[in-house]
Length: 139
Length: 299
Figure (cartoon, rainbow over the protein chains, first blue to last red):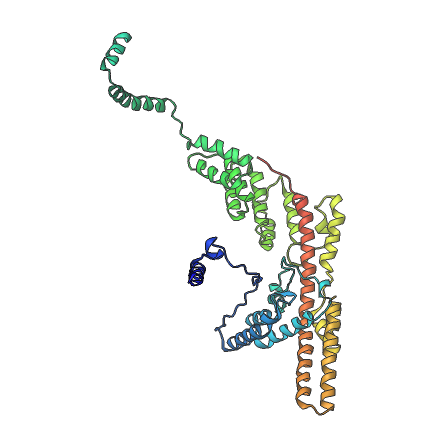
Protein backbone atom coordinates (compact mmCIF):
# COMPACT_ATOMS: atom_id res chain seq x y z
CA UNK A 1 0.00 0.00 0.00
CA UNK A 2 2.81 2.31 0.99
CA UNK A 3 4.51 1.58 -2.30
CA UNK A 4 1.33 2.25 -4.21
CA UNK A 5 0.96 5.69 -2.58
CA UNK A 6 4.60 6.43 -3.18
CA UNK A 7 4.25 5.45 -6.83
CA UNK A 8 1.02 7.47 -7.15
CA UNK A 9 2.68 10.48 -5.53
CA UNK A 10 5.66 10.24 -7.86
CA UNK A 11 3.40 10.01 -10.90
CA UNK A 12 1.32 13.01 -9.88
CA UNK A 13 4.47 15.00 -9.10
CA UNK A 14 5.95 14.18 -12.47
CA UNK A 15 2.77 15.00 -14.29
CA UNK A 16 2.26 18.32 -12.60
CA UNK A 17 5.89 19.32 -12.33
CA UNK A 18 6.85 22.31 -14.39
CA UNK A 19 9.50 21.56 -16.90
CA UNK A 20 12.43 23.93 -17.16
CA UNK A 21 11.10 25.35 -20.41
CA UNK A 22 7.82 26.39 -18.79
CA UNK A 23 9.34 27.57 -15.53
CA UNK A 24 11.94 29.88 -17.06
CA UNK A 25 10.11 30.52 -20.28
CA UNK A 26 13.19 29.40 -22.09
CA UNK A 27 13.14 28.47 -25.76
CA UNK A 28 14.64 25.66 -27.69
CA UNK A 29 17.86 26.74 -29.31
CA UNK A 30 18.10 26.39 -33.03
CA UNK A 31 21.58 25.86 -34.42
CA UNK A 32 20.41 26.06 -38.00
CA UNK A 33 22.06 28.82 -40.00
CA UNK A 34 19.56 31.38 -41.26
CA UNK A 35 19.07 31.35 -45.00
CA UNK A 36 20.37 34.57 -46.52
CA UNK A 37 19.32 33.72 -49.99
CA UNK A 38 15.76 34.17 -51.05
CA UNK A 39 15.07 33.26 -54.60
CA UNK A 40 12.47 35.11 -56.52
CA UNK A 41 10.09 32.39 -57.62
CA UNK A 42 7.62 34.76 -59.23
CA UNK A 43 6.60 34.00 -62.80
CA UNK A 44 6.97 36.77 -65.33
CA UNK A 45 3.68 37.00 -67.16
CA UNK A 46 4.64 39.78 -69.57
CA UNK A 47 5.07 37.28 -72.41
CA UNK A 48 4.71 33.56 -73.02
CA UNK A 49 8.45 33.11 -73.62
CA UNK A 50 9.33 34.84 -70.35
CA UNK A 51 6.74 32.78 -68.49
CA UNK A 52 8.31 29.55 -69.81
CA UNK A 53 11.77 30.85 -68.95
CA UNK A 54 10.62 31.81 -65.44
CA UNK A 55 9.27 28.29 -64.91
CA UNK A 56 12.57 26.80 -66.13
CA UNK A 57 14.50 29.12 -63.84
CA UNK A 58 12.27 28.19 -60.88
CA UNK A 59 12.89 24.51 -61.61
CA UNK A 60 16.62 25.21 -61.66
CA UNK A 61 16.35 27.09 -58.36
CA UNK A 62 14.34 24.30 -56.74
CA UNK A 63 16.23 21.25 -58.00
CA UNK A 64 19.78 22.57 -58.32
CA UNK A 65 20.52 25.98 -56.85
CA UNK A 66 18.82 25.55 -53.48
CA UNK A 67 20.60 22.25 -52.92
CA UNK A 68 23.94 23.24 -54.38
CA UNK A 69 24.19 26.56 -52.56
CA UNK A 70 25.19 30.09 -53.46
CA UNK A 71 28.11 29.36 -55.75
CA UNK A 72 27.88 31.86 -58.61
CA UNK A 73 30.68 34.39 -58.44
CA UNK A 74 28.59 37.04 -60.13
CA UNK A 75 25.73 39.27 -59.15
CA UNK A 76 23.15 38.83 -60.63
CA UNK A 77 23.63 35.08 -60.83
CA UNK A 78 23.79 33.42 -64.23
CA UNK A 79 20.14 32.30 -64.10
CA UNK A 80 18.96 35.79 -63.10
CA UNK A 81 21.25 37.25 -65.77
CA UNK A 82 19.59 35.09 -68.42
CA UNK A 83 16.13 36.37 -67.49
CA UNK A 84 17.39 39.98 -67.38
CA UNK A 85 19.10 39.55 -70.76
CA UNK A 86 15.93 38.19 -72.39
CA UNK A 87 13.90 41.01 -70.84
CA UNK A 88 16.36 43.64 -72.09
CA UNK A 89 16.69 42.25 -75.58
CA UNK A 90 15.15 39.15 -77.18
CA UNK A 91 15.30 35.41 -76.67
CA UNK A 92 18.07 34.93 -79.28
CA UNK A 93 20.22 37.84 -78.14
CA UNK A 94 19.52 36.97 -74.51
CA UNK A 95 20.69 33.40 -75.10
CA UNK A 96 23.90 34.68 -76.72
CA UNK A 97 24.45 37.00 -73.76
CA UNK A 98 23.89 34.08 -71.41
CA UNK A 99 26.33 31.89 -73.39
CA UNK A 100 28.95 34.61 -73.07
CA UNK A 101 28.25 35.01 -69.35
CA UNK A 102 28.46 31.25 -68.84
CA UNK A 103 31.86 31.19 -70.57
CA UNK A 104 33.06 34.04 -68.38
CA UNK A 105 31.75 32.24 -65.31
CA UNK A 106 33.72 29.06 -65.99
CA UNK A 107 36.91 31.10 -66.38
CA UNK A 108 39.10 30.23 -63.40
CA UNK A 109 40.89 33.58 -63.53
CA UNK A 110 37.92 35.93 -63.63
CA UNK A 111 39.23 37.84 -60.59
CA UNK A 112 41.79 39.52 -62.83
CA UNK A 113 39.00 41.14 -64.89
CA UNK A 114 37.69 44.61 -64.20
CA UNK A 115 34.44 43.67 -62.51
CA UNK A 116 33.46 45.89 -59.58
CA UNK A 117 33.51 43.87 -56.37
CA UNK A 118 30.39 44.10 -54.20
CA UNK A 119 30.33 43.93 -50.41
CA UNK A 120 28.95 40.39 -50.75
CA UNK A 121 32.27 39.48 -52.43
CA UNK A 122 30.58 39.00 -55.77
CA UNK A 123 31.42 40.59 -59.10
CA UNK A 124 28.87 43.07 -60.34
CA UNK A 125 28.02 42.11 -63.90
CA UNK A 126 24.55 43.29 -64.95
CA UNK A 127 22.94 42.35 -68.24
CA UNK A 128 22.48 45.92 -69.52
CA UNK A 129 26.24 46.23 -70.10
CA UNK A 130 26.10 43.52 -72.77
CA UNK A 131 23.20 44.66 -74.94
CA UNK A 132 25.57 46.16 -77.56
CA UNK A 133 24.12 49.64 -76.86
CA UNK A 134 27.08 51.72 -75.71
CA UNK A 135 24.73 54.30 -74.12
CA UNK A 136 23.41 51.65 -71.74
CA UNK A 137 26.81 50.71 -70.35
CA UNK A 138 27.33 51.77 -66.75
CA UNK A 139 30.72 51.25 -65.16
CA UNK B 1 0.06 106.72 0.17
CA UNK B 2 1.98 103.43 -0.35
CA UNK B 3 1.55 102.59 3.29
CA UNK B 4 -2.17 103.04 3.02
CA UNK B 5 -2.28 100.82 -0.07
CA UNK B 6 -0.40 98.05 1.73
CA UNK B 7 -2.67 98.43 4.66
CA UNK B 8 -5.63 98.03 2.35
CA UNK B 9 -4.13 94.91 0.78
CA UNK B 10 -3.29 93.31 4.06
CA UNK B 11 -6.67 94.29 5.25
CA UNK B 12 -8.05 91.71 2.89
CA UNK B 13 -6.33 89.13 5.12
CA UNK B 14 -6.94 86.18 2.94
CA UNK B 15 -4.66 84.60 0.42
CA UNK B 16 -7.46 84.11 -2.02
CA UNK B 17 -7.89 87.81 -2.31
CA UNK B 18 -4.19 88.27 -2.95
CA UNK B 19 -4.39 85.66 -5.67
CA UNK B 20 -7.30 87.49 -7.20
CA UNK B 21 -5.26 90.67 -7.33
CA UNK B 22 -2.29 88.88 -8.92
CA UNK B 23 -4.66 87.33 -11.42
CA UNK B 24 -5.79 90.78 -12.43
CA UNK B 25 -2.37 92.43 -12.41
CA UNK B 26 -0.28 89.82 -14.24
CA UNK B 27 -1.92 90.19 -17.69
CA UNK B 28 -1.33 93.93 -17.57
CA UNK B 29 2.30 93.56 -16.58
CA UNK B 30 2.86 90.92 -19.25
CA UNK B 31 1.19 93.04 -21.90
CA UNK B 32 3.34 96.01 -20.94
CA UNK B 33 6.55 93.93 -21.13
CA UNK B 34 5.61 92.66 -24.53
CA UNK B 35 4.89 96.11 -25.88
CA UNK B 36 8.28 97.42 -24.74
CA UNK B 37 10.33 94.40 -25.98
CA UNK B 38 8.42 93.80 -29.19
CA UNK B 39 10.77 91.88 -31.54
CA UNK B 40 9.51 90.68 -34.88
CA UNK B 41 11.88 87.86 -35.71
CA UNK B 42 10.48 87.64 -39.21
CA UNK B 43 11.02 91.25 -40.17
CA UNK B 44 12.92 91.68 -43.48
CA UNK B 45 16.01 93.01 -41.69
CA UNK B 46 16.12 90.08 -39.32
CA UNK B 47 15.60 87.68 -42.19
CA UNK B 48 18.50 89.27 -44.05
CA UNK B 49 20.75 89.02 -41.00
CA UNK B 50 19.83 85.39 -40.58
CA UNK B 51 20.26 84.70 -44.31
CA UNK B 52 23.70 86.28 -44.31
CA UNK B 53 24.66 84.18 -41.31
CA UNK B 54 23.46 81.01 -43.09
CA UNK B 55 25.25 82.06 -46.28
CA UNK B 56 28.55 82.54 -44.45
CA UNK B 57 27.95 79.21 -42.73
CA UNK B 58 27.58 77.63 -46.19
CA UNK B 59 24.02 76.55 -45.40
CA UNK B 60 23.00 77.60 -48.89
CA UNK B 61 19.66 75.83 -49.06
CA UNK B 62 18.19 77.67 -46.06
CA UNK B 63 20.00 80.89 -46.98
CA UNK B 64 18.33 80.87 -50.40
CA UNK B 65 14.90 80.57 -48.80
CA UNK B 66 15.59 83.50 -46.46
CA UNK B 67 17.00 85.64 -49.26
CA UNK B 68 13.88 84.93 -51.29
CA UNK B 69 11.67 86.08 -48.40
CA UNK B 70 13.73 89.26 -48.01
CA UNK B 71 13.50 90.06 -51.72
CA UNK B 72 9.70 89.99 -51.51
CA UNK B 73 9.84 93.26 -49.58
CA UNK B 74 13.11 94.85 -50.71
CA UNK B 75 15.28 95.06 -53.75
CA UNK B 76 19.01 94.63 -53.30
CA UNK B 77 21.58 93.57 -55.89
CA UNK B 78 23.94 91.93 -53.39
CA UNK B 79 21.08 89.92 -51.93
CA UNK B 80 19.93 88.97 -55.41
CA UNK B 81 23.48 87.84 -56.22
CA UNK B 82 23.74 85.87 -53.01
CA UNK B 83 20.42 84.20 -53.66
CA UNK B 84 21.55 83.20 -57.16
CA UNK B 85 24.90 82.05 -55.85
CA UNK B 86 23.21 79.97 -53.13
CA UNK B 87 21.09 78.27 -55.77
CA UNK B 88 24.23 77.70 -57.82
CA UNK B 89 26.02 76.15 -54.84
CA UNK B 90 23.21 73.70 -54.16
CA UNK B 91 23.18 72.59 -57.77
CA UNK B 92 19.96 74.28 -58.91
CA UNK B 93 21.71 75.66 -61.96
CA UNK B 94 18.67 76.50 -64.08
CA UNK B 95 17.14 78.60 -61.28
CA UNK B 96 20.54 80.15 -60.56
CA UNK B 97 21.08 81.23 -64.17
CA UNK B 98 17.58 82.77 -64.28
CA UNK B 99 18.30 84.71 -61.11
CA UNK B 100 21.70 85.88 -62.34
CA UNK B 101 19.97 87.22 -65.44
CA UNK B 102 18.11 89.69 -63.22
CA UNK B 103 21.42 91.48 -62.54
CA UNK B 104 22.53 91.87 -66.14
CA UNK B 105 21.42 95.47 -66.58
CA UNK B 106 21.79 98.50 -64.31
CA UNK B 107 23.69 96.70 -61.59
CA UNK B 108 27.22 97.08 -60.30
CA UNK B 109 27.42 93.30 -60.17
CA UNK B 110 26.50 92.92 -63.82
CA UNK B 111 29.87 91.53 -64.94
CA UNK B 112 30.08 89.01 -62.09
CA UNK B 113 26.46 87.99 -62.61
CA UNK B 114 27.14 87.38 -66.30
CA UNK B 115 30.16 85.24 -65.48
CA UNK B 116 28.13 83.23 -62.97
CA UNK B 117 25.33 82.95 -65.52
CA UNK B 118 27.75 81.26 -67.90
CA UNK B 119 29.06 79.06 -65.12
CA UNK B 120 25.50 78.00 -64.27
CA UNK B 121 24.90 77.14 -67.90
CA UNK B 122 28.15 75.21 -68.08
CA UNK B 123 27.18 73.03 -65.12
CA UNK B 124 23.85 72.17 -66.73
CA UNK B 125 26.02 69.84 -68.86
CA UNK B 126 24.40 70.82 -72.15
CA UNK B 127 27.73 71.75 -73.66
CA UNK B 128 26.51 72.25 -77.18
CA UNK B 129 24.04 74.92 -76.02
CA UNK B 130 26.75 76.44 -73.87
CA UNK B 131 29.09 76.82 -76.84
CA UNK B 132 26.30 78.37 -78.89
CA UNK B 133 25.57 80.80 -76.06
CA UNK B 134 29.24 81.74 -75.76
CA UNK B 135 29.50 82.25 -79.52
CA UNK B 136 26.42 84.47 -79.65
CA UNK B 137 28.30 87.21 -77.83
CA UNK B 138 25.06 88.55 -76.29
CA UNK B 139 25.56 88.25 -72.56
CA UNK B 140 29.35 87.99 -72.52
CA UNK B 141 30.96 89.95 -69.68
CA UNK B 142 33.71 92.20 -70.99
CA UNK B 143 35.78 91.73 -67.86
CA UNK B 144 35.68 87.94 -68.02
CA UNK B 145 35.77 87.30 -71.77
CA UNK B 146 38.91 85.21 -71.52
CA UNK B 147 37.46 83.06 -68.72
CA UNK B 148 34.35 82.26 -70.72
CA UNK B 149 36.49 81.39 -73.71
CA UNK B 150 38.52 78.98 -71.59
CA UNK B 151 35.32 77.44 -70.29
CA UNK B 152 34.05 77.08 -73.84
CA UNK B 153 37.18 75.21 -74.93
CA UNK B 154 37.08 73.05 -71.82
CA UNK B 155 33.64 71.79 -72.89
CA UNK B 156 35.21 70.00 -75.86
CA UNK B 157 36.72 67.52 -73.43
CA UNK B 158 33.36 66.72 -71.84
CA UNK B 159 31.32 65.68 -74.86
CA UNK B 160 31.84 63.92 -78.17
CA UNK B 161 32.03 66.97 -80.44
CA UNK B 162 34.85 67.18 -82.96
CA UNK B 163 37.81 68.91 -81.40
CA UNK B 164 38.94 72.26 -82.86
CA UNK B 165 42.53 72.89 -83.90
CA UNK B 166 44.99 72.23 -81.09
CA UNK B 167 46.58 75.69 -81.16
CA UNK B 168 43.22 77.44 -81.06
CA UNK B 169 42.10 75.30 -78.14
CA UNK B 170 45.28 75.78 -76.13
CA UNK B 171 45.67 79.52 -76.70
CA UNK B 172 43.38 80.85 -73.90
CA UNK B 173 44.86 78.58 -71.21
CA UNK B 174 47.84 79.65 -69.09
CA UNK B 175 51.23 78.46 -70.33
CA UNK B 176 51.77 76.34 -67.22
CA UNK B 177 48.61 74.30 -67.99
CA UNK B 178 49.09 74.02 -71.74
CA UNK B 179 51.29 70.90 -71.71
CA UNK B 180 48.74 68.90 -69.65
CA UNK B 181 45.82 70.12 -71.74
CA UNK B 182 47.76 69.23 -74.90
CA UNK B 183 48.11 65.69 -73.46
CA UNK B 184 44.35 65.55 -72.90
CA UNK B 185 43.85 66.77 -76.43
CA UNK B 186 45.96 63.97 -77.90
CA UNK B 187 44.30 61.40 -75.63
CA UNK B 188 40.86 62.59 -76.69
CA UNK B 189 41.69 62.79 -80.38
CA UNK B 190 43.47 59.44 -80.60
CA UNK B 191 41.63 57.37 -78.04
CA UNK B 192 42.79 53.77 -78.27
CA UNK B 193 39.41 52.25 -78.92
CA UNK B 194 38.88 48.62 -79.86
CA UNK B 195 36.54 47.83 -82.73
CA UNK B 196 33.60 45.56 -81.77
CA UNK B 197 33.43 44.32 -85.38
CA UNK B 198 37.12 43.33 -85.35
CA UNK B 199 36.65 41.56 -82.03
CA UNK B 200 33.67 39.62 -83.38
CA UNK B 201 35.50 38.64 -86.60
CA UNK B 202 38.57 37.51 -84.66
CA UNK B 203 36.38 35.36 -82.42
CA UNK B 204 34.64 33.90 -85.46
CA UNK B 205 38.02 32.87 -86.91
CA UNK B 206 39.60 31.61 -83.69
CA UNK B 207 37.25 31.26 -80.69
CA UNK B 208 38.47 33.51 -77.86
CA UNK B 209 40.76 35.63 -80.06
CA UNK B 210 38.35 38.59 -79.90
CA UNK B 211 38.37 38.48 -76.12
CA UNK B 212 42.17 38.42 -76.09
CA UNK B 213 42.11 41.41 -78.47
CA UNK B 214 40.02 43.36 -75.93
CA UNK B 215 42.41 42.45 -73.12
CA UNK B 216 40.32 39.69 -71.52
CA UNK B 217 42.95 36.99 -71.89
CA UNK B 218 41.48 34.58 -69.31
CA UNK B 219 38.03 34.75 -70.90
CA UNK B 220 39.56 34.22 -74.35
CA UNK B 221 41.45 31.09 -73.33
CA UNK B 222 38.38 29.74 -71.51
CA UNK B 223 36.22 30.29 -74.59
CA UNK B 224 38.78 28.54 -76.79
CA UNK B 225 39.05 25.56 -74.44
CA UNK B 226 35.25 25.28 -73.96
CA UNK B 227 34.53 25.46 -77.70
CA UNK B 228 37.35 23.11 -78.68
CA UNK B 229 36.46 20.57 -76.00
CA UNK B 230 32.77 20.45 -76.84
CA UNK B 231 33.61 20.25 -80.58
CA UNK B 232 36.01 17.38 -79.93
CA UNK B 233 33.38 15.55 -77.86
CA UNK B 234 30.82 16.04 -80.63
CA UNK B 235 33.27 14.69 -83.19
CA UNK B 236 34.22 11.60 -81.15
CA UNK B 237 30.57 10.82 -80.35
CA UNK B 238 29.55 11.04 -83.99
CA UNK B 239 32.53 8.86 -84.87
CA UNK B 240 31.42 6.29 -82.31
CA UNK B 241 27.88 6.51 -83.74
CA UNK B 242 26.39 8.08 -80.61
CA UNK B 243 23.99 10.32 -82.47
CA UNK B 244 22.21 11.89 -79.49
CA UNK B 245 25.39 12.77 -77.61
CA UNK B 246 26.93 13.94 -80.88
CA UNK B 247 24.13 16.42 -81.48
CA UNK B 248 24.11 17.45 -77.82
CA UNK B 249 27.77 18.44 -77.95
CA UNK B 250 27.27 20.07 -81.34
CA UNK B 251 24.62 22.27 -79.76
CA UNK B 252 26.95 23.03 -76.89
CA UNK B 253 29.72 23.95 -79.33
CA UNK B 254 27.37 26.31 -81.16
CA UNK B 255 26.34 27.78 -77.79
CA UNK B 256 29.94 28.55 -76.79
CA UNK B 257 30.98 29.66 -80.28
CA UNK B 258 28.04 32.05 -80.81
CA UNK B 259 28.20 33.38 -77.27
CA UNK B 260 31.88 34.10 -77.66
CA UNK B 261 31.43 36.04 -80.91
CA UNK B 262 28.69 38.11 -79.32
CA UNK B 263 30.62 38.50 -76.07
CA UNK B 264 33.75 39.70 -77.90
CA UNK B 265 31.82 42.54 -79.51
CA UNK B 266 30.26 43.43 -76.15
CA UNK B 267 33.66 43.20 -74.48
CA UNK B 268 35.12 45.68 -77.02
CA UNK B 269 32.29 48.10 -76.26
CA UNK B 270 32.88 47.80 -72.53
CA UNK B 271 36.60 48.34 -73.12
CA UNK B 272 35.83 51.55 -75.02
CA UNK B 273 33.41 52.71 -72.35
CA UNK B 274 36.07 52.13 -69.70
CA UNK B 275 38.63 54.16 -71.68
CA UNK B 276 36.11 57.03 -72.00
CA UNK B 277 35.15 56.79 -68.34
CA UNK B 278 38.76 56.93 -67.14
CA UNK B 279 39.53 59.85 -69.45
CA UNK B 280 36.44 61.81 -68.36
CA UNK B 281 37.27 61.21 -64.72
CA UNK B 282 40.85 62.40 -65.17
CA UNK B 283 39.87 65.53 -67.12
CA UNK B 284 37.08 66.42 -64.70
CA UNK B 285 39.41 66.03 -61.73
CA UNK B 286 42.04 68.22 -63.39
CA UNK B 287 39.63 71.05 -64.20
CA UNK B 288 37.84 70.83 -60.85
CA UNK B 289 41.15 71.14 -59.02
CA UNK B 290 41.75 74.42 -60.87
CA UNK B 291 38.15 75.65 -60.61
CA UNK B 292 37.94 75.47 -64.42
CA UNK B 293 40.47 78.35 -64.58
CA UNK B 294 37.75 80.71 -63.35
CA UNK B 295 38.18 83.48 -60.77
CA UNK B 296 36.67 82.84 -57.36
CA UNK B 297 33.85 85.31 -56.82
CA UNK B 298 32.84 85.59 -53.20
CA UNK B 299 30.40 88.30 -52.28
